[in-house]
Length: 309
Image (tube, rainbow, N blue to C red; front, side, top):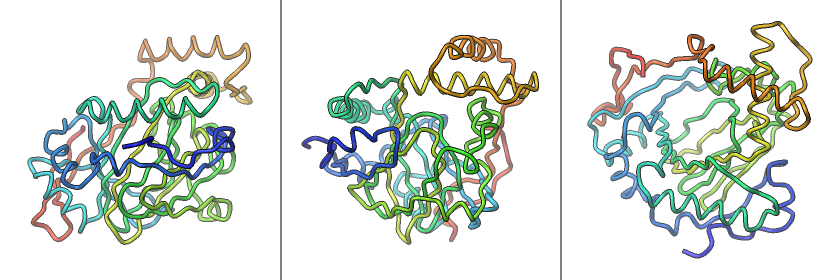
């Protein structure tokens, strides 16, 4: 495989991290994301490194359920996803198979080679295998994100990381782990969204914490997610974490959330101390597993007694 990025230009470099960018890639040529390769990967994937979810149809009323693959084979898991309504997320793939870590490093070496001043750390690569017409509800992520399409087509809605699309309180709650990534959504937000049908060989990146939601076309989708941190992203995390503590525990409002300036240092110290002492541990959101992949079921899944993951 030649360079992973194709058609990258200086304008994209200038906009990286600040705007939504649609670009092209060659991940398919690696051979790591075929259905056969992923079936083998699924069979040896540690339970603590994956999530499989099912959800409803209404983005204004998000309903998520967490499941498990169990002892279903990788091939049968993919077949169940094809006819069901599920979203399998293989997280931290580089920790499980070094080939994916090598690919991840190559991707960011290329990014750093074409984007002046970019220095990344805590990189991560995930793989998404998702059903036809399934959707991912409105949410925001903490680190820098890119979405790479390998098979199928998905419609991606991207919104600006500001009020009313993302409140300070919502972002703080996500960063503190008090909620998952889902945030309040109104249909009127779509009037302001950037809407892109992402096809194989295309990828998207968007501004930090930019809310987004996804609707698959009527086809199986195989996608890759990459995430990264920079010093600015780390500062933003620390400031918002500390602001969340100050808001919820001390009633403070109107706080500076900029990832630069003298206020970053004391807030970073507060965030680190709060996390180390696990002062918010009892408040963290916990989701329960209540279904299992079942290739014999028309829906590809069966209910099981709920347990905390």
